[in-house]
Image (cartoon, rainbow, N blue to C red; front, side):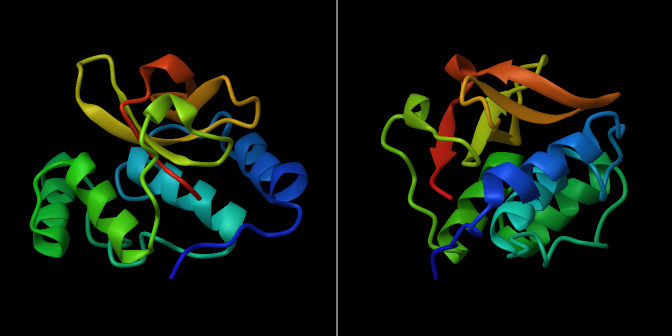
Length: 147
């Protein structure tokens, strides 16, 4: 089943989500890259794409164990692919065509792929950093799925 955006997702729900999370620090299991992206998509659509993951981890090792147990994979990318398939999200053929609110994978400072969403301005992807929302140039997006 494909996800459907709420009528005022950009001017209300997603905007309010970004404002509320602006300075919320990184925390495994509640405000890490995957939960940040899932919470953004929940604000946009009302659907919790990470329901199976909630409450199952609280640090890096347990997050990787949860990914393996739930998806059979070993990375955030594997989890994103599994979630996209489960929720009928179409992968964009070219990641740079990602639109506002889309689920994306972007490289972190260490080169690992992290989950995020395209910002309301359409020029940035956002995820959570140590001290809150962190912006990445849209040109860094490696994979993207339509929301």
